[in-house]
Structure formats: structure tokens, C-alpha cells
Image (cartoon, rainbow, N blue to C red; front, side):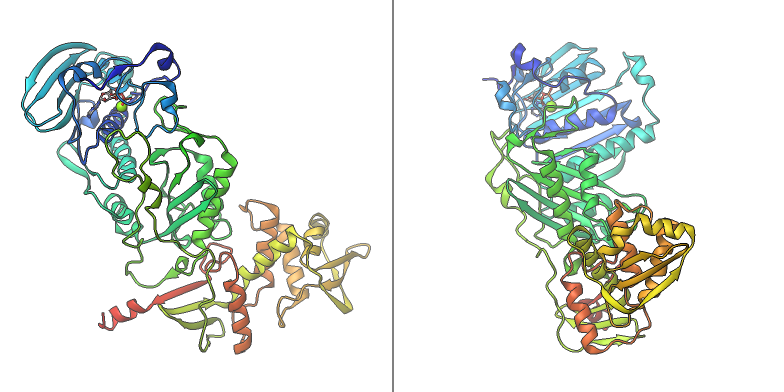
Length: 567
Ligand SMILES: Nc1ncnc2c1ncn2[C@@H]1O[C@H](COP(=O)(O)OP(=O)(O)O)[C@@H](O)[C@H]1O
Ligand SMILES: [Mg+2]
């Protein structure tokens, strides 16, 4: 009994139709998705000439019997849905029954498949016409060979890029699927050279290392977040490692890769005030929502999805990232040792039964580690100040070194953000008001930023001409020089410094934090250091200053042990 049927006209009409085969990479994507839907545990891809000459995808999945094999290349032939309602929460990559038909119509196409070892079928298609069907002996699974892609559609062949860039696109297409399914082994070779070799793994860190190298894998922090019906899991780069170029951003929903520049921006928003403007962090985020909260049937190549409540998802992604960055482990580290995702860090759908009717239960419990949302103060024992600039203390896992200025900046930034968005802070009234002479630019800047200055505690009054009088000033620490800080702030405002910040409040809070914070070179008493650290660890993003630098670095105990040969 065959599994494949042709979708009824009205069902087929509800499916987002369009061109699925644009270039060799789309062929690779469609064929590998079919292999995954067929429950393959091992998938081998080879391309020649950038995929113009040949693309071959072999799998060890369920295979097809002879009737299904013949049906599979018809348009709207699918085993994955029957009714339009099956589209809600559809767990398979495919559901349109179009890929094989489209590919076969623009290539020399060969399909070899067997539902059980021994009983195979081999069929060939030329320019969309079934040419031959014969029996063949092969092991269970399917191999599709696509030769001379677009040979009969010269217009499309003309649009292909160089073999090198087509190969690169094919590698990227497989990379994305390899991130989605850790339980499957993938290889890709191009003109005989291995480009991807990713054995099945239980740990996303291992897969990331196999695809992008160990270095990136070691820079990642786990994300684990839940709010209402949405769960966000994944790995994001330590802020200190984010760079201006070369980042990767991969999103998945219910195990399905998708593109969404706006959600990537939400993830970046979670980094705000921890990385330098212009730096882009690498993120891998897997979102899970009930099947009816996301529509996957909106894009011809299924590259995009539509969430029912977009703002909620954007908020969840931003919060998930911010929470991941708030832990002690997010701080910068010494040593080349591994601080990679823990070995039980897994993600993505569980190995599902082929063409499972729904997402398996176990899918929801795969990430079992939960990083605490806010770093609890790890400070105990004596504090040491080095060079009148750094505060050093011991933690159970090693040695932590805090930069007193960066740390205070972080504290004042977060305080200022609260003051700016809340009632503001009362300044300290001056017995002798200060009179300052300013430039016209500076006077204008003060006028514009009047309510920001007063929110952090400055009470400023115009005095006619170029003078202003300060009646009250903030008091962030005993050595605070209110006069100098005010002048610097006003100069920053007038010069429009601190560009690149998302909004005006954040920009001002960062300026204020920077100018008001205790400087390097100031001696601090035990009591002062302790109170600074307590306030630092109460911050949301304690490990990072507001310019994209760390506020603390860690020397892990095991790194010491390694260096001294104790490990
Ligand atoms: N590698 C494969 N192994 C087993 N069955 C396959 C494979 N590739 C395709 N099929 C069968 O052929 C049908 C048509 O494939 P396709 O044209 O990609 O449409 P869709 O994936 O949307 O169903 C699938 O529904 C599936 O039953
Ligand atoms: Mg398909």
C-alpha cells in the first residue's frame, strides 16, 4: 500500500506556492529535508562543479516502494499531509509535494530507493518525463542524483554564480540543517573534497565545533528561558568575543530553521550596553511554541515563518539573551581552556519517528540546565585592591578580577536607567551653588537634555548670558567631583558623543555612568570595595561594562591547575 497521494486541488491551492529550485543549494536543501523527513540517521551529499554538473544526496531512511517512487515525482504528491488542517503544527520539513517534481523538471534526475534492503527501484526522468523504471538491489534508503541542473532552462543557468560561490551556498544550506538535527550524521563533499563532516552528537557544542571550529564553540553561553507558551534555548556568544564582522545568527522554531532579521535584532537588543555599537554577536536560538502559534506555510522555500504574536516572541528572545548574559560565567576569561557549553547541552527535536504526527514529548525537556537569571554575589573573604584600579577576590571556581571603574560604570548606568525611566533621583543640595560659564553649544545641549540631567540629580538653573547655576548634584560616591562630571557630561552632550546607542536614555545613562564612576587610580577601603561589588552583583548585566568591555575577568581555578601541572 502506497503512502503518497496527490493533494486534492483545494488543499494544493492553500499551500504557499512558488519557485523552490533557484540554485544548487536549494536542491541540496530540499533533498536533505526529504531525507530527514524519512527518518535518516546518516546523510551524504556530494556536489560537482558547484552543483551544476551533479548533486547527489544519499540517505538510510525509510525509502519508497515502486508505486510511491513513481508517484513521488508528480506535482503535489506527498505523504506528509492530506488535509489543509494538517498544516497546523506540521512536524515535517516538507508538506507541499513539489520539490521532487520541480527538480526533476529542470535536470537529469535519477531516484534509487528501497523500503527494505534488496528490493529497490531505480527510475530516471529527463526534462520532466519519466524515462525508465527498473528493479535494483540496494540497501534500505534513498539516493537522488541530479545532473545537468537547468541544462534545459538556459535563462536560469545563466544566473548561477561561480562554482565556488554555489558550493559555498550548498555548504551553508547543509550547515543550517546540521544545526537543526544533532542526532543525524551529515557529510558534504565538493569535487571529492570533504567540506562538512559532522557525526551525530548529543551536544550542540560538539556540532558547533564540527561545523565552525572549537574556538567559536568555546565562546558560547547557554540560553534557557521560558515565558508562557514560549521557550527559548540555545547558545550566544560572550559579549567580549563579539566582533564587527563574521558573525552567525541562526534561528529555529520547533526544530525548523528560519530567517528573520527582526528577531535577530531582538537578540542583539539583549546585548545592549554590553557590546560596542557596531559589534555583532553570534547567536544560535531555538524557539519552541505550540504548533498553532506559528505558521510555517508562508514562504515558497519555507525560509520564513509567521508568528501569531510577534511582539511576545521578540520580547522573549531579547529577555532570553539578556538573562544568559547576566551570569558570572558570561564574564571574560583567561586561558584557552574549554568553557564550552556543558556536555549535557542539547537542543533541537529529538530523533523523531519518521513522519511523526506531532512533535515528540521529549522535545520539550531536552535542555535540562537552567542558568540562574541574575548572578548572585559570589564575594566572600578578603578583597584586595591592585594598582588602585582592580579588585581581586576568590570564588569557588577561581579568581575574579574586577575593574573598579568599569564596574562602577555598570552600576551607575543601571541606576541611571531606572532613574530616567522612573521618578528620578533627588540630588544633594549644595550649600554654595556652583556657577559655570558655558559655550552656546553647551547651553543648547543642556536645554535639550534638561530632564535627563535632573533625573540623575542635577538641578540646573539658567543665569542669563552664558552662565548656569547648579543647585543640586548627584552623589554616587564620596570622591565624586560633581563640577567636573557636569562639565564633561555637558561637553559630551554638545559634541554628540556616544553615537550608535539605540535610544537617547541609554546614551545619556552610558555617558553619565562613564563620567560619574570612580576612576582608576583611586584607593578604596575594604568597605568601599565590598559595597561596590555588592551593587555590581545586583546589576542585570554585571559582567560587562557599558562600552563592550568586560567589567571583570576570571582566572579559573582549573586554568591555574593546568599551568602548574596539577590537573
Ligand atoms: N529521501 C526520501 N526518502 C523517502 N521518501 C521520500 C524521499 N524523498 C521524497 N520522498 C517521498 O516523496 C514525496 C514527495 O517529496 P517532495 O516532492 O519533496 O514533497 P514533500 O516533501 O513536500 O512531501 C514525499 O512526501 C515522500 O513521501
Ligand atoms: Mg520535500
